Image (cartoon, rainbow, N blue to C red; front, side, top):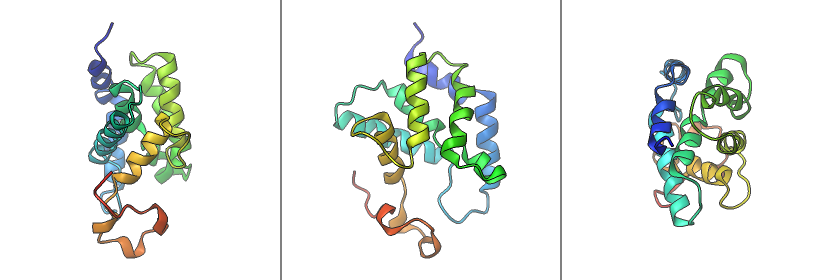
Length: 162
């Protein structure tokens, strides 16, 4: 059986994944609001893993990381075609996941989490963990662009505590 962190390495080294991240970085180069590059994705992964551990959720850490590392890939399509990023990200992530050793069930859970990461879901579901981690990763309390941000006040993160 393939080592769990090897599955993440396969994802991170996937040519399509790397290309998408590079394009998102270029498209967001002058963005004054939150960006969606690898730094954000890793923040979300680490926060989601902490939330899962605190709640004794049974997801393997690499499944949590895969969902987090893939959750904003759809930003590329959002910026270039206008398609909602959570929706677009499902197909993009599926193209990458098929080249990894994640099981079909794990892939389905990851894709479901990507699709629902803006709305949340059942408590302690992978979707909910990803939603909460994505929200908690934002530093709205210290954002120089907060005055013009489109995020409603109730979604903004005003703390560093989980």
